Picture 1: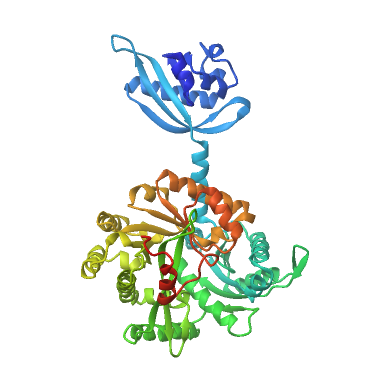
Picture 2: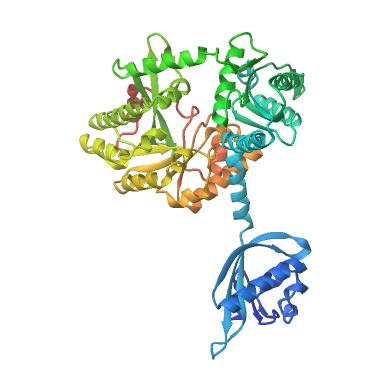
Length: 553
């Protein structure tokens, strides 16, 4: 028994009713830098701080009094004060008459797992590049600041900040330099904040600053201009000097809105007004700023006509197996070509389509067209690969969404295992139980389920075990220059560990450099997509590419 217990990598021990150690295994002794035999007869007070020892003995008493197993995660202080996390299990020890005569326990080191969980939790609320708050983190902080304002009767100012012409830095000097500039901007913004303020990055070169305790709108304007001047101070990166300007929009509580979303929307409209009227200054939100609303209304009207006019079309981006460099899947990308607006970026029309619920019709059209195209490739003797289709939250939250997909599969005689539905983390977390049931129904029929842009939303570890998932797609923001970014490497390594723990396939998006590809390969990421391997292709271009892989399915 001694040899068996010494062979396990966990701490194991037996105590009497007074808390004296009657047995410890070799790993237990090693954790405290002692020979196991020297610990016999000692108590937790001899090994740990008084507070920690008392907590251990209190657990022992609970186990002996209840006569049942106790399991908990706790901090253990080992040799030299080393802190680690352990999953501890304690059980009562009984004699032949059934009387409790002590306790026995094991403790497994879970420090690495806890670190990975902490990293994911931090990631859920913070931007990976600047360590500022991200969208969920900003919303949470803003709610707290607004609650304080309601109590104090003071105002709140929200500033939406966009760096002017920042794209030129990325295009001319590379994203590495651009990232360093963003980090400097983030540090400057943090240096302007007080205890009741918050700052976050929404993505790209867009930042939000929330200032609490504002006495008046005039005071908010003064604070905003101070922020702007601070950001426009010359900066230096890698020995090169830069001068930045920024366009800022401001909204205030309670005049312009009473919640985070209303304030962000108002400040965003004001920021675009500033950018469209000379850049480099601060604009206040007011009722007269209808230009953005008019644009959205115009786009909404044209979106309603787009399907009837056959203005939508699909592009296809191949997914490659990293080991064999063969195509193993295809992601469907929606595109819109309007006679008046030209080729409209998805980032512009998708939000309008979702807000107006037109996305429901568009989403149904995309699913049907994707199936039809894949079947057409199959009839032409080309391989029918799994087709990944992005879904809107509105689509998934329909009560009969699973029936709609099932009916399409039946109508087109389309093989379910050649359809992959991509959802964002927020789609899963909102209205979670009905979504879970529908996804379980679809997955039982053979449809694959993937999480798109993993790590940029809620990153709640619970859904990885509860929801019927097959694939995690690592967001491109973590892949860009990953070979040069230790922090991004840690994040991706944590995601890889989680995927392996839950037996999920990994797909890395946005691979544009061989060095990125090599690093992902070293981590064991199975699949990749990105401009390095193939840009989005038309149906005919995709067919030509698939022609070189006939027989692969």
